[in-house]
Image (cartoon, rainbow, N blue to C red; front, side):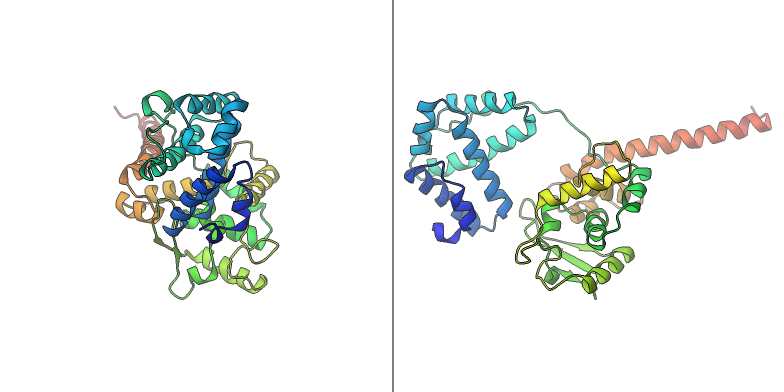
Length: 318
């Protein structure tokens, strides 16, 4: 089964011995057969590695030999190590969720008796945060300093189509239908496929990039051409342009997706349509953006009332 996994991913399992490596490879192979994204498989390896390396030597050896030996106390060590490194609660919970699924697989396979990740004991409380769109002035300033055809298209795709970073990285020219002005997003987060649409400015940017780029199946190939641009490259590029634009706010590329959702809501798009465009499995995820919409409505209301009161005072009305 390991021959089906990328060689680079197999190489990253060198911290495990034969049995543990076989256990993890069997699980990753199952996920790959179910069309899980490569980034998800890599994240699982990172979670397992973090677990093993966070343990005292004796326990580290035990888990490196057999992952089925994991105990709740080992998970405690992982959480303590992660918190001491300053990892966010959401990041830690994400790794715990991945490990939970792995251990469920081992239990169903008869290799483990109990689930070591205990929700009430190990789940960390996370603050409820609102999505963070770019302010209008920051958005204008950001795009104003982008002089690269590729980079302008990359960030415009995220803004006009609400793409996640991983979705933008993996786009191929076969996914783009310029004649139909649409793009197919395959195997998005939660295994949701969707169709997004190409706005006029995005169409021009795509056509321009098509004439400038060298042949590759990917819209944004890496230097090797046979592989897509990495997510780290996109984060680095955004930091560069934010710096050039003199923007102090700590925006990430994902904020462009939040901006897309907020702009559509403010323009009157329904939640049901926004859910489909965003690729959300649940309407509950989409509902998070209504809080931003409420704030926008309140701001516009306050501005309108200020103008009304100002006219009222000028006319001397009661």
